[in-house]
Image (cartoon, rainbow, N blue to C red; front, side, top):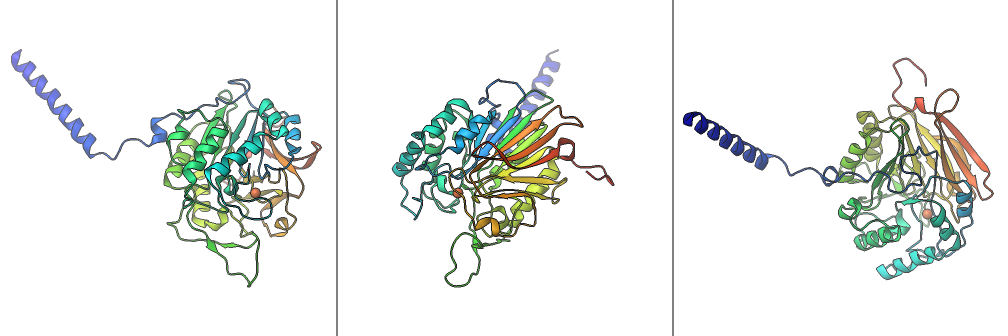
Length: 386
Ligand SMILES: [Fe+2]
C-alpha cells in the first residue's frame, strides 16, 4: 500500500513537473481577445431580438447643422454606425489646423451640442470607429503621436465603459453580435488608423493637388494596414457563428482606383481580407465603408463568393470630383448629395432571406438600392451560378 502511494505521489509529482515544463516552453498565453470574451451587443433596443435595419454614415463637419441625422432617425434603425470623420479635428473646412487633446475634446463637444446629434443619441443606439479626421491627423496612421490621447477622448465621447476590452487593447476595433441563434447579425468595426503603415505617394504632375491620385499601391508585404494583432482578432471574430456580417472600414476596400486613402494602397492587406473570408468560411459578409464624400456600391469576385462594399459618405458635405474617378467594381451609384447608408435585412423574404443596401437622402427617399440574396453570400457549390 505504502509502495502504491509512493508510486502515485511520484506520478503526480512527475505530471506536475511536466506540466510546469510544458507551460514554460509554450508561447506567451492567449491573446487579449481570447482572454476577454467580446461584448455581446450591450447596445440594442431589445436584447436578443433579431435586428432588421442598420444605418451608417461618415464625414460630418461638427460646426455645421446636420439635418441628415433626422432622416436617420426617421428610418428607425436598430443601430447607427459612425464610420469615421464624425468630427474634423485637424481641418476647419478650409485648411489644416493644429491638433491638441484639448482641441479634439472641444470639437467633440461641438458635435455634442448639435441639436440633430442630440436627437440621434436619444433615439438610436450608436457604435463608432474612426477615420483620419476624427483620429486627428490627415491620412494619419501608426505614427500619430496623439493617438493614445485621441483614443481616450473618442471612447469617452461614445460612452465606452471604463472596464471594456476595447480600452485595454491597442486601437479601437470592436465587434458585436445581435439577435437570436438563427438570425445573428455580427457588426465588426475595423480600426484603419492606429496600426496603418506608411503610404506611398504617387508621381503626379507638378502642382497637382487634392486627394484623387495622391497615393500609389505600397506592395511591401511587411507594411500593414490593420496590424497583426487586429488581424488575429478579426480571424477569431470571423470564426464565430453569424448569419449576416457587416464589416465596417472607414476607407473603401473594394474600389481601388482612386488613389485616395483606401485599401487599394495596401494590395497585400486587401488580398488578405478576401483570403481570410475564404479561409474562415465566413458567410454573410457585406463590407461597409466611407471617406469619399459620395455614395456607391462596389462588388468583386476576389473572395470565396461575390463580396459587396457599400460606401456611404457625406453626412454634411459632398465632393463633385471624387465620383469622376474610375471604379470598375461599381454596381450602384454614384450618389453625390447628402445621404446615409441603410442595410435592411429581410429575414422572411419570399424566396429566402435577403439584404437590401440603400442610400437614403435628406427627404428619406432612396437614391439607389441593391438587393442581395443571403444564400449567395457563401461559397457556391462547384459549377453553380449564384
Ligand atoms: Fe471625410
